[in-house]
Length: 291
Image (cartoon, rainbow, N blue to C red; front, side, top):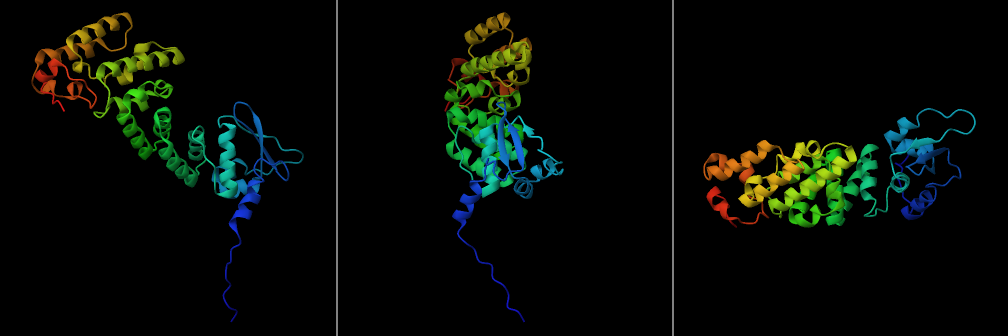
């Protein structure tokens, strides 16, 4: 009987380096992508992409006809992110950067590359900071990445004031902003949170060309107006007349909490303190604990 064969392995580094040299190399390539808004040409090899990724297998499944094949247009993925995807497909490794990892993560999710997605998620958690966290939260909410969303919310809870001042916060979708406004652990006072919500709504209104109140409608119900002192609530009411943001009914309910002082209606979410809520005299009459 012929003895069983034995699989032996050569050195991985030279093999990986050789394949890396083929990334975006027009030599021997048989497919050209036109990538990103800048429409940059990127060269690749059909057989390698197809055997490594079902997305490209479907995309490139049709045999090219005679002559020079037409470029494949992928306008939504940035060039740097696409090259990182190719590097991973060719070498099973990738060099990630803080400034572009979310774009690589987005591409990995869209192309069904689970291993690359996990590598990106691990990297994002390691480099998460105030400037990156809201952008990461938006990606997490968009693609249903629950663990990343939890990490981002926890980070923002601990660094609330700094995160609210970032451009990423102003660019959050309503769906991404909601879990923040529902949190009891935000380290920010309600007055500042109301101002941040107004700034967010103004940006959205300018981008979407819609009224501020319409943009804010899905999220402002989570603002806890009863935590504001009467003078603050009066000032907010006047500002709201000049620039509608919050439904009048919601402001009326806040006044009711002040009037009721005690009872079940004054103990619900609209009156519950957050971690960063500054104490006010009327909080004592609302049975709010001071920690």
